[in-house]
Length: 229
Ligand code: URA
Image 1: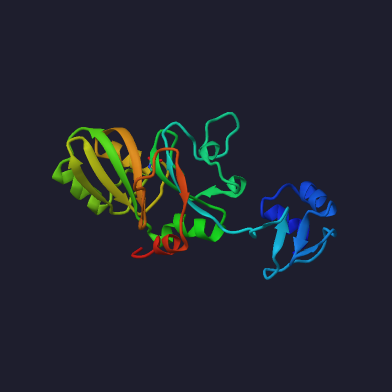
Image 2: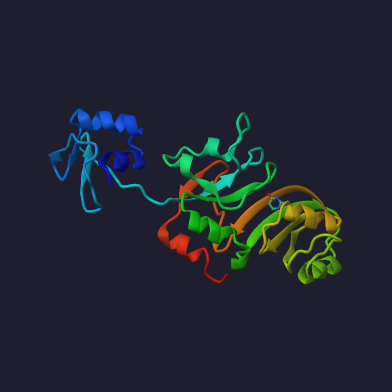
């Protein structure tokens, strides 16, 4: 890979900026100053800018606690989850399974397209668990209906698991990601939701992450996400 591309991919600056760094002698490859921006570097080479080793571009995987009030897309003049991600790779990150603006909780983001596809593909049946604060009666009949798969005239939902946690709070585990699915299921059960929070995707729990905070997932966490699915 060209040296200028290596540096800009590694988020050291725009292509023009890194070219200037190279031409002004700020960049070394294996300890030798290289002023040619087209110089070829490979994974084995140690590239330094201003004496600091530059880590090559990498795949990143984030877990993020989305607060309500933020959309999951990049929309101009609208508060978006991307506004809360102070991360050098933010421009490359994509959400692996959106949440509605009024829904809070666990979102996974990555710049690894294959991984995102695996998380959202219905073929992988990855569980998504939601806590729902609601008004109404969650009867045993309604629990059975969910377990058998809720249906409307136009839409069918796969069998899911719903459990009361305490008065006015339930847990719903689904393996699909249909548009407004939790809200539609609540409407079919004649339950009025006031708050929805996603707390788990596959084996990854929201845990102690505070609203608006994110952290990078370890390779182990990324791999174990799909276990049991
Ligand atoms: N179901 C919904 O209705 N909304 C979400 O954001 C996620 C699941």
